Length: 260
Image 1: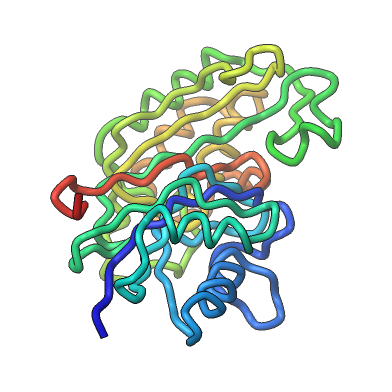
Image 2: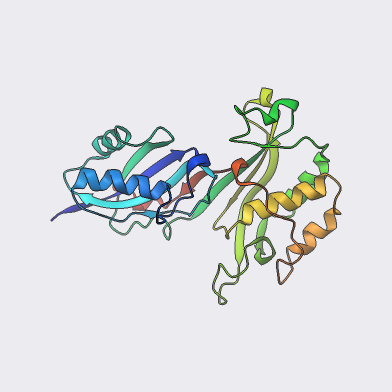
């Protein structure tokens, strides 16, 4: 039977999901999508995600790849999915792709943000689902200095969960952008860390943010942050920042993989 390859651009509030990947007896983003797709296609199928976001992590630009029967068009598929998906998961766009497209391995870059709430109302239930409350004073120049150290290619094994990459992996990532900036809506008082790279290791952004926040509040000198970029283990990294501030913003693919 003829098939088409599709890229689904997904947005979700990760608060009530146990992460992206299907897990027995747990509510996951992949699980919700595959349940609806099985209903639409009349048969079980598997889709591939660009990355495995953890429990509590959000997305404005997660990508999934799937092959479906040829009668589907991007617009019809998007409308059918959004008509049946739960309120905290939404398909922002659907693109038809070349058969060689793979949501994970075809990606050339990913971009994340991490938001912290710096105002007294940051603990409000209307804000703390999407930004980590941070009531302590922060040395903004120290945060900026740490972010500047990340540009270029580094071995990030000190900022990754140990054992989640093969021993043969060099843990090197090429960082294209790393900066702290005010939130897009300044009235919230949020401060956002934005980072883009060719790849990310497990918990890498959360370890980076957790360590930078320790530098920013004076718990460790900024020089230790730079030293971690050459460390052989993650023994000295700070605890990872909580998941609710993290959001997968976008995944980039070569233009030639798009069918139209």
